[in-house]
Image (cartoon, rainbow, N blue to C red; front, side, top):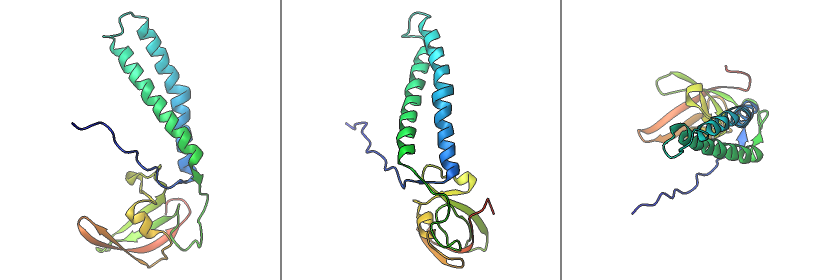
Length: 169
C-alpha cells in the first residue's frame, strides 16, 4: 500500500529580485486582507443555512480557507528567509543574478532570458531560475562564452551574446 507521504521540496536559493519580492508581498496582502475575509463571510453565511454535510458552499469555503491559510503560512516563512538582490553581484559584463541574457542557439536564433530566483521564475515571461541547469551554467559567464548543457535530447550549446541589468533588452 502506498502512503501519501511526499518528502518536502527543497526551497531553492534564497535569492529574489525586488520585483519578485513585491509580487509575493502583494499576493500575501491579497490573500490575507481581501480574499480570506470574503471567503470567511461566505462560510459564515453558508453555515447559517443549517445542514453543513451537504452544503457545497460551506464545504468549498472551508477547503478554500485551508488553502489560503497554507499559502499565507508559506509566504510569511519564505519572505522572512529571502534575500533581495538589488543589482549585479560582480562585473556588469558577466551574467549574474537578475541579469537579462541574450543567448544564441546552434541554429543562430536569439533567446532572451532573465536569471531570477526559484520563487519567481516563469518561462512565459522569459524568466529562468538561477537553480535551473541553464541558470547555473550562465552564472559568472562573460559575453561570447559558450554554454554547454546536457539535456534529455542530447548536448545543447548556447553562446552568450549579451548581458544587461536594465529593463528588458
